[in-house]
Amino acid sequence: MEKEVLVRLDVGDIIIKDGRNKRFDFGELEELADSIEANGVTEPIKVQYKEGVNSLVNGHRRVAACKLVKERYKNKKIPLRHNFPITSLPSRILSENESETDILVHMLVSNDGKPFLPLEEAMMLKQLKEDGNFTAQQIAKRIGKSVSHVSDRLAILNADDSVKEAVQAGTVKTSDAVTIIRKTKGDQEKQKELIKRVQTEGSQVIQKELLKGRLKQNQWETAEEIFDEFLAAEIHPDTTIKPTEQKIETLLVQIQNTPDLDLAFSLGKVAGAGALTNLNLVEMLNKLNGRMNGIEDLFK
Picture: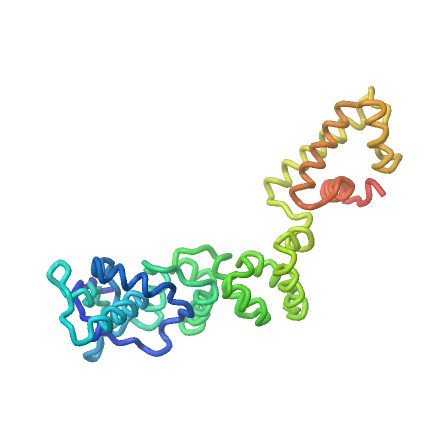
């Protein structure tokens, strides 16, 4: 890629190419215009000079705010800042050989102002995938994001409209929306139902129903060590309580009446691990027993 050239351009000399900018929300443009009126534009935008036209690549908010400032000074002399009109913008000129795919990458990695909303970014990633014929792995490498980040954003575009609207409005966290999309396996009616529940009941719906029993690998390793401690306490010669022969409720009552501290302590640690996954003590014990021994229902 050729070296970028830095120049000053008046906002009136910059062309907005249809379809290039994917923003739905430009944010508080009046506030940005106030800042530009006081200080000028300090961060360079990016444009591509091609066939006698400077088309905008990155900096749509700054250009829109400069237009507001220019309107404020209609029929008046525009003030100078650092010897330049406040409606001029420092601009990096990209090579005319840059393709639309290259420009999309520039927009994704050079976003100096307001971050793109998840759905805005998703649309850009989809265009990059289709126009550039890239895999999620290739896109992730080019824009400096993880593969899971790219895949999650793209998944949003295949969701029910209620999911996309909730993400766009910010009423549901992007991570929760992605969990709903993944767990419902394309069932848009189920997605619609879960989004409505999250909006009314809160994100605990995700934890209790969709992520129940889910831990990271290192957390499962710790939980399995705790389960080993429980089994060791269970078979200790001094232990008079035999968990495998009775219900968990009976066991807990017996521990309260005839304290077996090692067993009680190990059960407490199992319960703590279960709390991280929204599993009760019986569910956690059976989950761990199944993971380690391939046998379900340690306790009924």
